[in-house]
Amino acid sequence: MRIQVVTINHGTTDYADLFLRSLIAHHPDRSELRVLVLDNDSGDVQRLDWARRFGVRIRASGYSLDASVNTHGEILRDAVLAEPDCDAYLFADSDVCFVSDDTLGATARELDSTPDAFAVEALWANEDDTIFHHRAGAPPGTSRIRESVRFAGGDWGEPYEFDVDYGDRVHPFCVLVRNDPPFRSTVELLGLSPAMTQCVRGAMFWDTFGLLTQVMRTHGRSWALSSRRVVHFAGVSWQSEYAEDKAARRDTLLGRYPLDHLRSGG
Image 1 (tube, helix red, strand yellow):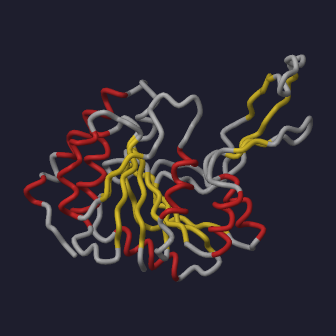
Image 2 (image 1 turned 90 degrees about the vertical axis):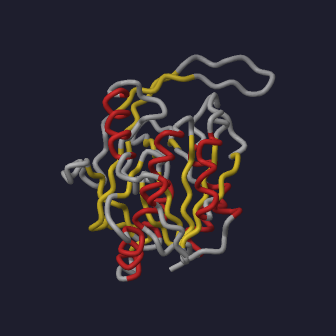
């Protein structure tokens, strides 16, 4: 299976370094893999230049760190439309670390053996192999939205309020997605960004990949959890809480993957 790996570096170069080192170390045969790093003007991305000799492509995403909205889904949509020649996409956050050999090969075999699945999501693990228990499809809660709208040339209307529930989705922190016509049509027409319905009753917020998940359901397609684990630090580009602890854990893992021990592979 030809896999296009896509990750975004959003001021997270230290983590992207670990992502690439662990990916290369655990996948010495990369003849079926292509790896693309899209950088949001991080400033220090040149520190990843070592990866180019392993076939990793690094290029600017066209977006900056100070965008006023979450650009993750937009960047991934652009990448899918620009990189059509693969059997599947591995979308992964830059703060992921691979911990076992041939993780992507095993995940690809799971996707192949599950024809009704449009995607297979890795298990979110800690360094001690314990699993971060998030029930598939569990909504994280309800938010109260208060907003106003203004038509061009008009005045702002009176603010109005409504409740919004969070819909379930396949999580894009590390997920292998089949590159087939329903997926490509969804990406082209709707994109991969968050979306929200505005309803007095039943309003819903779909986070990144949420709308994709719902459209795939209309095709009778579901997603599955992989048997393979990856370490995911989560929230390192925007969440300051536990930043020092996460950085220390990251640096410990970096010590497992010295650059001079990496193999060039296929």
